[in-house]
Image (cartoon, rainbow, N blue to C red; front, side, top):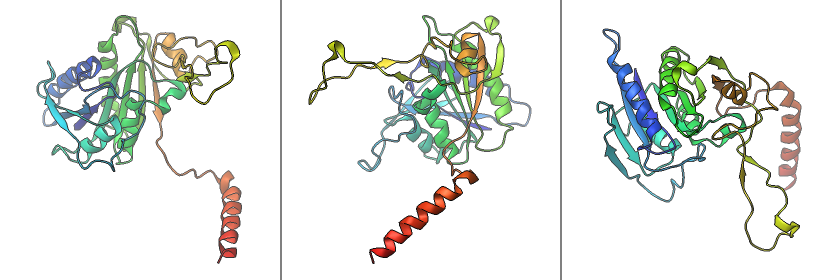
Length: 283
């Protein structure tokens, strides 16, 4: 079993270090005859909110990297790359480090990734990218707070990892853990993606002044990240509500794929017919 670890907070982020230490212990506890390995390929800085972006790969011919040592996980090679999470996942999965992983783990993110905010998450973007190469993935996030309990999230992640390794390829799971010590965690449940958004409408500009040719637009972060705020409009089994109630939330995700809904057949037929007719008329 070969794991690829990454994140969007940077190779030196505490969440990744704690996850790596738990993975290192998981490697040491391998059953007789089973080989467990892990490699860290993560951004060299904070790339939060980058989703699955790979950056301007056309404007450069190489990606700089630097070797790091994670205390307590010295047996796990770690590299920081001048690249966002998705590109780190690609380079790590395609054998750039003489390593071919079976699974990608991304995190532990400092802040929850629930609701519509998952679309923008670099943590989740990494596993979505891996799925395009046939890899399964686990994104791990913990609710933000004054004292973030990464250890709780890491312990749950390793338990999920053992099950994910037996799942079909391209299985993607989003794990969100409340900011609690392990003994206070109520359990883990399947969470639905809620309607919570990362950015909310800011409302009218100060003083009601009309927009000029240039200026600044106010930006207000919603409840989806990082602390998970008001969830009064969510159902009890929505991901944000579960975290607020003290449960870890585990949600299966799907990456980009063709929409095979037969309800779109007529729409596609009309569009193709109309476009073809216009193209023929121009000949």
